[in-house]
Image 1: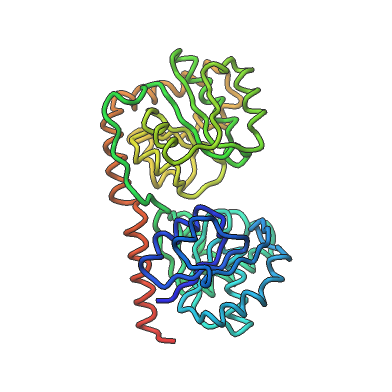
Image 2: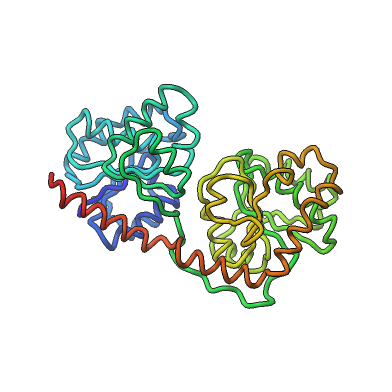
Length: 374
């Protein structure tokens, strides 16, 4: 099978797909930007095309669209069985236009990443129209959560495979006693969509009840200076540590040392970071989003902050009342901490490993080819 990955070659997410696909297909790659160094060992330079644009991926990228003739010419030379577009509003548009209008051979398969389905089509009628056309052009699409799959079908998608953008390797469960019962970890981007201010306010309520509680905040973003000031204003400067972007190995250490994982975005599909935390045995405390409820049964293997406990409602609560609402739930989960760690690790092993999901994905592509030869 000859397959072209079409996406942002500088993204670690596209590189992860390339690692999974390279041993199983004849892999080619076209990038709207350049290529991360990891591609060198996976796709030979003669099988790659870098368009060297700087798209924002939300649609309407004139510079990217101007590269369509160049991309189409390259794709006609490749003659791929499948053109696998990642992020439908940008790269999916290129694949649809190339096959629909410029005579490029091959079938289109599309992988939605989240905001291209959950956010962008709501921004304008034009972007919704474009998303519908791209989805209808896909012989198969993939989604990483049921809520996103449902939305794709509402927009006109045909067949959709649903599987998490899961882990490549399952880490061993940290030894009992390795983690601090009152230690918290957060590593989403320090940007508004991830609501790191809510994470700090939530931790402030917890810290009032657990004097030895500590929080490590990894990752970076535009809000970091404001968050450091917020931590100081809340009297948490000595208990909240900002460590910036971490390597995979260093991040694994933080997961293994933390009992709790905090993630409170305002919009999200199934998060790889949440899956990583669960695999390491952390207890996730998450915002009330449909995709989070696909992972966490609130009060059983983690906590989804709904109703009066939601971060939006907490903004109007005194810290003491916030703590009264929250702490009994955390105490009950902590009492079962080791059992929850084992259960979450086992769930990821069974449901959220990337390799088996990609194998099933390729098997389905071959079935489609066999049933409908070109």
